[in-house]
Image 1 (cartoon, helix red, strand yellow):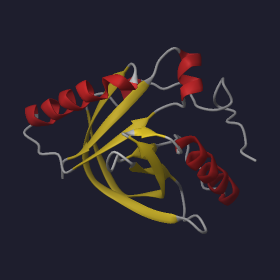
Image 2 (spheres, helix red, strand yellow):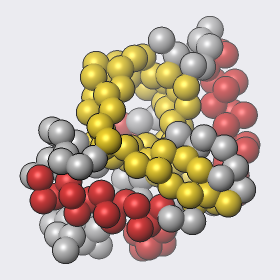
Image 3 (cartoon, helix red, strand yellow):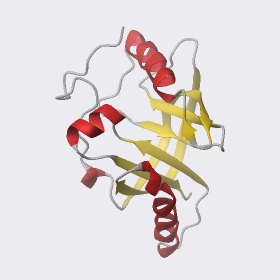
Image 4 (cartoon, one colour):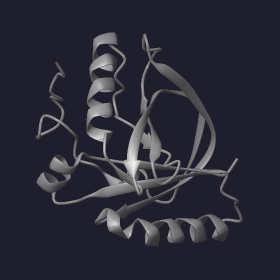
Length: 162
């Protein structure tokens, strides 16, 4: 059973503050994540909710939740992506990954159907900074139910540049 989030008015996802992520340069050194695979159909995640809930339950059971929940998606093609949830320690029976590097971040708000425009804009942003993108991650800041409650659907695009 997943425990409710007491810091969120919905009991689930906290209200997202885009100012902490907009046009930032971030430096990560071995940031720890639990990693799992999500089945997609033409980039539309089919099993994301089920995969996230399974992993959140394991993370809570291990006492490894972070103060600010960070969940990344790396969209590996038409039929799948990896979901990575930040944790404070290794989770039993889970694939663990560490992510290091320098990242540029851009925040977007709106329907996921705008993702193509957002990616194009994020690439232009990196280019304007004289940076080449080595890897792209998507941080979906709230679940669909909480996005509806808050009236905002934010996505952060994180571009690994070094």
